[in-house]
Amino acid sequence: KLASREFHEEDSVFELGHGVKIGGGSMALIAGPCAIEGPEILLEIAKEVKAAGANVLRGGAFKPRTSPYSFQGLGEEGLKILREVGDETKMPVVTEVMDPRQVDLIDQYTDILQVGARNMQNFNLLMEVGKTDKPVLLKRGMSATVQDLLMSAEYIIAHGNKQVILCERGIRSFDSSTRNLLDLAMVPNVKGLSHLPIVVDPSHATGRPDLIPSMALAAVAAGADGIHIEVHSCPEKAMSDGPQALLPNQFTELAKQIQELAQVF
Ligand code: PEP
Ligand code: MN
Image (cartoon, rainbow, N blue to C red; front, side, top):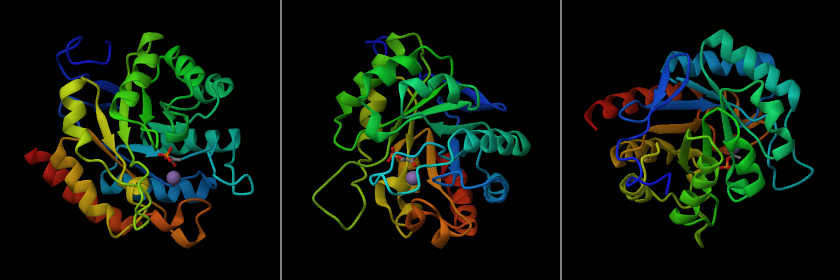
């Protein structure tokens, strides 16, 4: 299998833009709001996370919301804002693509294409992103096994795109005390099975700002190649995932600890 360690023994390393690398010891710190809400607020958050040490900016323009009545994202206008803010703050950007018909549009604006948990087995989407030359952040489906995740990566690679970044973002469990159940054991598990870099997203995994710092650090200790964290300067007013957002000053503190710990592991 193309995603397997047997096929490719060395860790894969990908260039994300602005000189940022992931894999083989290079740590990506991906941060930003859940959704792009406007140019001023995104620029404000981007400057804060950049100053804290983030090296990739995230933000959704097309949001996969559970309710059709929730904010769906700014669409192409959001993509333009993300591109401009990424250029201004000199960070590569990542945004979600939900539909195979949107791949060309989103590819024009972003450095990294995100496939969300709800689309991990949207095979038509996987084949389309597999035809691009952009790194793909592939999030684990909420009920996907490790093998399911690796087979979805296989779809992308088999269609020509080797640059797949896996992402653990928690799986559904019976326990409603956290948003999802963070499977940290999957990190060393997948490292043994695959050469692909792995990012951990404690924001969506726990849904709780009080648990995000310890889980982010545990993810570094587990061998993660990147950490993905949602940050918002005014979580109460966020258009999506406000309750799980870290404030910029909380992120700054955590980013420092992540960088210190990353030196050790
Ligand atoms: C997101 O990154 O905002 C998101 C929707 O994540 P997930 O697909 O992991 O739920
Ligand atoms: Mn989110």
